[in-house]
Image (cartoon, rainbow over all chains, first blue to last red):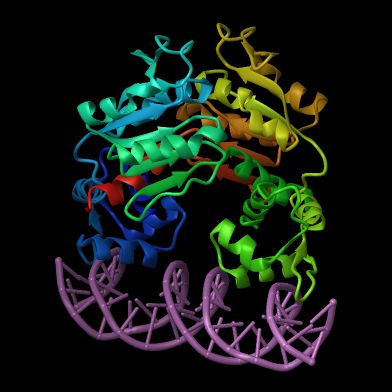
Length: 197
Length: 197
DNA sequence: TAGATTGTTAATCGATTAACAATC
DNA sequence: TAGATTGTTAATCGATTAACAATC
């Protein structure tokens, strides 16, 4: 569930000397309610100690397992433009076990460019790349008009998780997860609050 | 509210010849419930016509007004790295009236680089830039460790809306809006579903 | 033991949806 | 008029929070 990454990050920001952590402390730092924390952790099957709190190291380990962060995932970025470039260089991915194994682009002029130490490959090779490198996650960083086609190809090739940065809603069959990051929508939500002040 | 940008985008994708649109059609395209649409629009003060639906052009206009998209907003990007670069080049911003008026960076080596047709300026000039160019929205595209300091300076300079791409939670006083886009969290949510299959 | 904190149930709250009279 | 669709109320649902016995 989507609060787990927040807990994990919060725990990481704790002092190295802190062995236990109460639901209250975790809640305050994560910006949620302590009952929420206890419920989430309880659902996860993590047990704290009454009167003491949760063991930080054990909790981190549990969260990492629950989030599937104990193994690495191969990520392919489709789109070698500015955004794909930025994503390829994003250091945070490696920290959490996401390996960018390919950057592909439809534009022959971009093929061969080096993004984050990886040479951009042709979009035509997408299917082969997904299969050979066991790509688990596809990131779409293309213009909107290309997004659906790219998604279809990723899915046909076996990818079941997609992070979509293109400003387009893409249709996917059941069993495929898509998360969308829409920069314009984020800004529009900000302006909604901005102008009604 | 955060569904409004979705409605707006959906309406934009309608054929140019479609004059009216039912709550049912809008709901299907936007992936929500028709009662939801009617309630949202009713709350907005938009009136449809029973038996007919909503007037598309009027609805778009209402949504644009509600979202504060009838005027332009000056945006400053802090961080002239890959992400700042990608954001500066993001065409979608201009479409919705967001003008990137500055890209600043703390690194003297980056100052002078041209990002999206704009020369990167020193972070030290942030306060002056915000004041002179009437910056309404600040985008933080710095490393995590710099995020809070940058936010503090943006807020001190008068910025009330912040979009934070740095993987850090930033503390802001009441009256300041922050939206956070955390790429690692997005991927972690995907893996949560991935590995439990 | 006394204080602290969990784990969980029950209460609350808010958001979503069903339903339907109003009416174009 | 008949069919379609809104606007809104009431019902439902799910998520959040309060509360407290259990217990370290």
